[in-house]
Image 1 (spheres, helix red, strand yellow):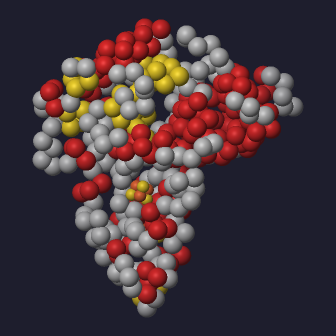
Image 2 (cartoon, rainbow, N blue to C red; image 1 turned 90 degrees about the horizontal axis):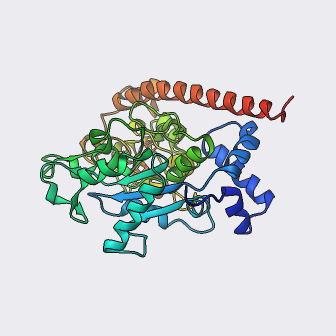
Image 3 (cartoon, rainbow, N blue to C red; image 1 turned 120 degrees about the vertical axis):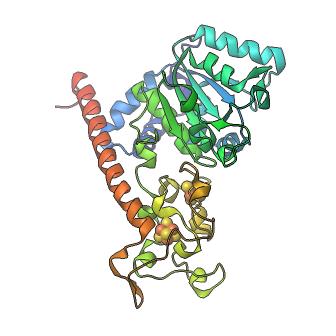
Length: 366
Ligand code: SF4
Ligand code: SF4
């Protein structure tokens, strides 16, 4: 690679103390849902990691994913990680334009062939190559060209991951996802409309630490961040269990912070880290501000009924309780949640084993 600086060197140059760096590693470890015993292994791996070249391609998108990332406040984990990568090409963020920008992309691809990370936001319009182009090249051709030399691809946002809103019926552009076009490279989906910034950087941190992408669920999402549904971690869950629901956005239940299920919350069938990581530096998330989850990290989330329409009528309500807590959508979510939780636990156990074995090799554990 062109830039042989290690992440440790870069962070030290930025004035990050050893203590600050270890604190950062501890936060990353917990963010990636790994055991605290992994902190020394992660610190060592991150410190020695080379600055990776990242090429970011934006296709049929609204720039919301980039906005999400750049709206985070400094200094943050996101900021530290982004300072530590070499973002060699990004339409919105780069100073270069036109021929100079494309020359930067080509040179990054040539210098780092087989090693660079490709980040994509936006879907790919297949029905007419002219719908969306970069430097006169169709999105599909550009993706195929840049994917050839990529070590891995991160599909950021629901559009890149599953086609997103452009894919909604009647899908006038023939919008498809990254993995509909590329099948011979590892692709990790980081869906959300937009995704949580720290989840994007968490995936980058995982790649820097372990040299590979994290464990994924059946929809290609990292289990560490998408292993639980919103409902399982929602602070309004006790109200759901007691059958206390807001019926309108301004009734007494809404004022008292009761469950938003009847107002269309899709939390029971939506897998994302919003209820734990939250947004805006952990300040809040949509349910905390009084609106149900729209399900934006699920494929075709707009098809789950109207945004203010309940998944199904709660059944088994007796008095003020919800007998058995059985709700069609929730039951579906719970079954799939159990599977995801088991897979997440397996993934964590594997990581811990890798970490402990690494440490043993280095004689850091007895
Ligand atoms: S239905 Fe929505 S608001 Fe109610 S507990 Fe579940 S996630 Fe929270
Ligand atoms: S709460 Fe639901 S709709 Fe809102 S950002 Fe999170 S996953 Fe998307």
